[in-house]
Length: 180
Image 1 (tube, rainbow, N blue to C red):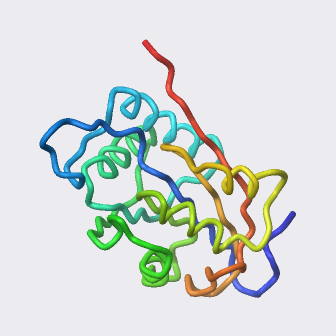
Image 2: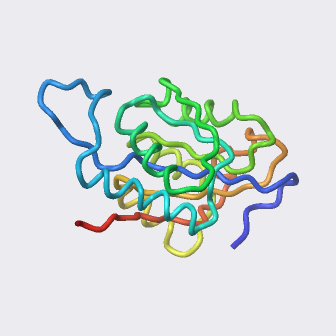
């Protein structure tokens, strides 16, 4: 299954939900760190992105501690991580705000990684995917767990081509690290 024809280069939006977070008492939600499982799963997500040839030209990452830690641990798995832009607006963002952030990305970026939170990320994937490969759409509808990775593809000369029902969901991964 191929992305819908629409002219322009292929663009891939890689949507990564932060890894499993801890719930320490008296810690503000924005400041919650990764749990031990999250510290195992985030590097596994980075390896999965490399194995799927989905290394980003740019990452947009929520400023929440658990999202930043996910980015840091995932990108540490790559020889040369791309640049990251931390955006407080991604914390708790809904589909219109997430899509607005994507649309601000420069056209020379072909693969964009978005690191953030549910339910916004799951809703974004479902809104953008006009079609999916295999059972990918059904899997996203059922659950978008921590460390989940969705890869959406579409053609366009700029990131505003990434709009509702214009992309194909090409992959849905849930990488897990091994217990020590």
